[in-house]
Amino acid sequence: MPSVRELTPAEYPLWHRILAEAPEGNAFQRADWLTLLHDTEPEVQFMILGYFDNQEQLQGGWATTYQTQWGLTSTSTAEFFYSNPVLAVREPQSDAHQAARRWTIITALAEALAARLPFIELDCHPQFADARALQYAGWEVKPTYTHLWDMRHPDQTWQTMNREKRRQIGHAQERYSFGTSEDLETVHQFIQRYHETMKKFSWWISPAWEAAFIERFRWMRVQDACRLYTAHTKDGSLAAGVIVLLSREDHTAYLWRQGSGAEHVAAGVVPALYWQAATDLADEFKIVNFGGSPQASLSRFKDYLGARAALHFQITRNSRPRRVALQNRALWLKDQTYNLGMRLAGKPIQQMLYALRKRKERSTP
Image (cartoon, rainbow, N blue to C red):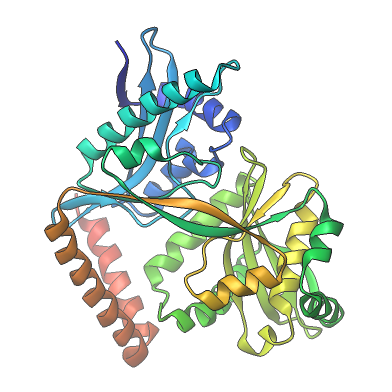
């Protein structure tokens, strides 16, 4: 009888093979990437559910991170990209048979995940195109968009770009020096630029976030799973940087974190930096994924860069709506208090609190 259960470490290679073959898979659902998140943020856990057929063959799975806050267990904020059911690729079958198989596996995985987590909110890969099984199982399925550059034909992508953006890129290429870096000094400089950028969205970097970020970057560089592309001024100062995550499973380079000085943005350093990364990686990574756009202006910016708006789904399952609403309100208040504290007290207070917390962790048996 078919069954759904959590995979054991011995079964992870089977799951990784599915991710490498299925169009809706990517590197960030691998066990090693999920372990990285847990190791650098211990309160974040992960599970990989597997759907096994009558012959105990793994036919599909679903990987996600989760954590418990104030007594409520829910999916954690996505650090990387996408979490959705992924089905093993099988020999060509009739459309009707494929649809029935897909429906059966996704329904079973969704039921098992919902039984474990009272609140689930996830973004699906753009190649996860049929979410009907989730919709009819009571999940909320909402359309949202990312942007993609198709780098199989770089010249064509360049020509689809707004003429003004092409002009900006040309001028920026004359004004700045572009390359890649991985030394710790440059990483710290990038974090400062990233901090400048994120303050526009009322988000402030904490020492805990910075420490976890550096550890993740180190791991990803050892695995050749990311690149830090940089733009320096002629005097050698960092004008901007972008970290690109490399997913060989779906041949996609993901623009993950971007930081730039306000005085350099008007000079076109950001689109030039993106284009530098995309062309440098184009031989191996045929798609560049820009990620979502929290503001309409950011979405239009990507349109002007000639990136294609790609539909994908945000899926939600909420079995405790009142409890979730209360927690969301509490988290909002916590974030507002934190941001206010950072504006008033600055980083030294946060560093002191972080040091006290780490000291407490070390002293706990």
